[in-house]
Length: 481
Image (cartoon, rainbow, N blue to C red; front, side, top):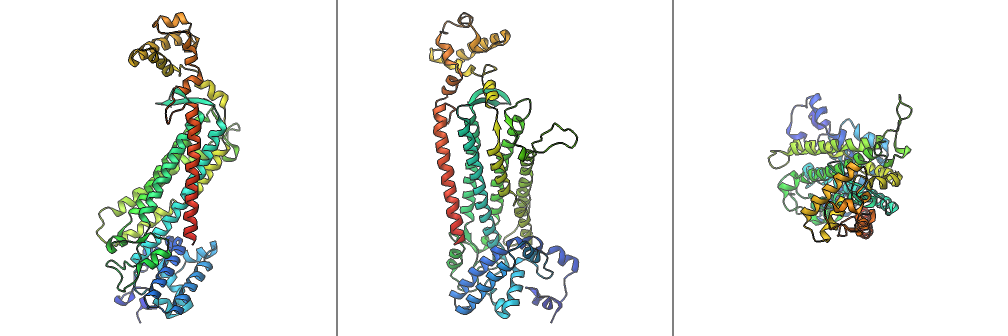
């Protein structure tokens, strides 16, 4: 018997010489794909069911294998057990590890499970299961953050703040309207992940190494047991497809960008220069040198994490570039970038708690919303209602704004006589048309910041978040089944 056979390799029959020891250690993937133990066990159980239905395994053999697989998963469920998987000295990868453990328990029956399958289809299946579960966890985290945003929006009531373009004050908006902008982003992120989950939810088992299984397996058995919508349609594509990994990481990158934008605004608004937000102490740190400091560490770290996520996506893109069909060892490198972003669901949970703990200085935000002639757009709209073309109205209000700035007052601080030097259209009703509430309510269109519109938007956002949560729970129950 060769050295390779003695060491229990899955492919040793063809080889006479042992592997170079350093190369053997370097090419092993068990040091990171140990994370796929649960997925490997689930896929192996499903394959056993298919083999049983095909008559390759007897009913008792199928039951023995499935029980042994469950026992292997249970034995290594703890942190210590996971370390034993990762540090196994013989196993090349998670597939080899499970096979070795099966042989320890069942002897030659453990070897029989590999009938009619290849590691190429196994890793393709395991990764799909893993990413599908990650999407479920991430979607739950998105729903939690969105709920926290909506709760803060409801608590803000009719408090207003400046909106910004080019980071310059633009128009007053409701604080709730600003917060709901991030809810929309979060819901789009959930939608992108759902679309990715739909596309990946096909089962590669039965694809063999590249050309399909050499046994007449009913592929729907494994697909159904694992909660996939159907088997994959093409064996070559099935074993070489990692689109779903790249798509998942791209969706996470956009989510990370949205989290980073929110984190940046909170960091900015918490400065003394803005003073709109009071950072919660439970999510802040101090300075080792300056006793007065309260630093926004959470938002700064959130802002930075998108770099790691996007880096993972870029790594996958470069790994897949130019690969010929079908499976290539390069694809082993597509696993670690997925594992490298496993912090995202936990980050979302932290963001939800942080968002819920934020305290807003509504008085200061309201004052800011009423300074700097931010009602100039409403003033121009007033003149439009008097029959002026908008460009003419814009010009007249621009002159009035410059005059008010020079005088050191807001538009409402100009007398009617002062206003009428810019046009006879100004009347006493001008002042009511440029109050804060009137300025908000003149944006009375779907998606605008008018108070009635925002109340409806809050209810609609709550409904969509509830639907997202129900969908996530349904998927979790289905996966558990």
